[in-house]
Image (cartoon, rainbow over all chains, first blue to last red; front, side):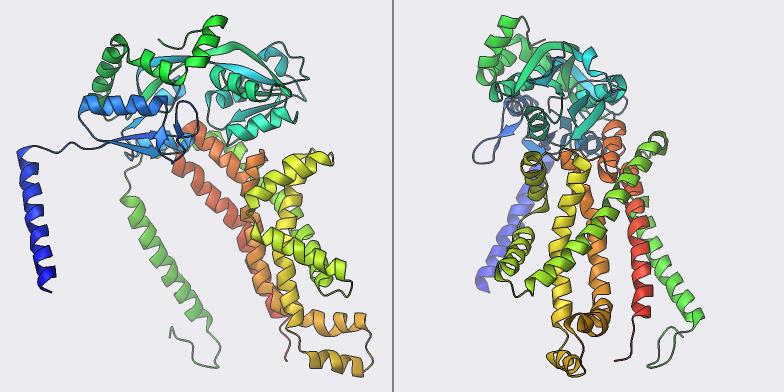
Length: 264
Length: 256
């Protein structure tokens, strides 16, 4: 009992101290960043389950420059924009393409990364480009909510579009020749082809160029300015190149050989 | 007035009044919850995609109906096999039930479609999906049916044999009517589960109701507007099943 009372008193004093500290200097609100940790090497988890990757490091550096502690919220990709709209997260840093349609619901920062949609094909496919896929009887796999999904629904009216929750299931479909093609970004499809060289081939030439940006709520224009300032200074100080060397080294070399560059 | 006295029938007025009270209570709770929500509703975007909801709902109806019938057949056969005197048959049934009940449906769908169905040349994902769902539910149904059969006391079987009924006649006239009556409530729950579990088939790109709602959500970013119709659509399927089961319960209510 004696001990309890002392503990209680201590808590009280601590609370008092922290409140007065709060009056002295407003404690920094945590910066809550939403991302889907299923897109290596950008958003992934290490062997112990900790978030890691290109976007995680970018978020860490951004939070540090804003002087706010970072909280990463693992959210499925199609839940990111609703989470931002309802104020559950402050930012989306999840390799998100800044599209016009999405810009109706949320704001985007300046773009920081360039990518493009390309094709992973089953080995036996004779397609020479995306135009060859827009035919009856052709099955095209996409990941739900991605730009590839949106492209397929509007541009491939004749083909049958198969919608998957997981990238891995879509790749499995192509490698088993259940689907003719998988529409996804260049880097991922390059990696998917490397892992399934016996059963798939790839057309890396992008048929739709896109660029990624950080998503910010429409109600928070102050944060948007801060983020844009950060991106500008991060670019000039070589921050993006450093992240590229850390996470994309091998692919960077390969894609430079093919004549593509990632950074804007 | 709102209490049922022991042994007396409930009046229609009391029924109506009680239902109204319950309805009002639910309405009050939910209208309060929704009024506290700051959310920009956008029903117009959902309305544009109404055909997608309808198509998805129809696929769910078709797959659930097929799975319902097939799982009942599988469940019945498995329950009988579990009581068979042929040992390999009995053990096969036991193994099937344990394997299915002990593993997640998600894993079963993936393995069945990408490994088993592929190997046997079954490439229609809708058929493979309905089959997986039937096999999954069949295991649960077989245990319910087996429990029903075994709840009939041995004395009844002996009496049946004493009055000269054959094995088949015993099942038809003694066991079946009692088991059916006992089975209806758990069966109703299981059927509702089949309908809702069919949403898991979206992982092999079966374009059922839930996947379509999720797609609309992905296109319009209107989460609640996409999922509320989903709840209504599933209720439209599960409520009639409950209703039919109530009616059947009454019909099979024999004096014992």
